[in-house]
Image (cartoon, rainbow, N blue to C red):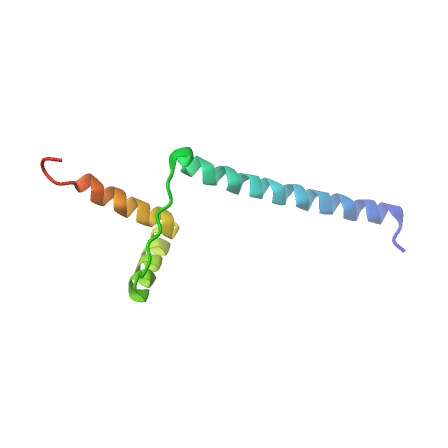
Length: 88
């Protein structure tokens, strides 16, 4: 059996690691909602029958841009809609 001092030190280390992990999880959670300022009014779009090759290319392009596929596709859609057509 370990002396009480060793057990207390181990317990303190475990508590410290738990606090660090919770802080990281909290930051990840806050970042998610900071990046989606329109979260309350967002809709879901499901696209079916995406060819495997296209899916792979989009996934690679998003990774190269350092973005999730979702954020990458939303930016693509925003750019396309911003182009618009004359008279709209």
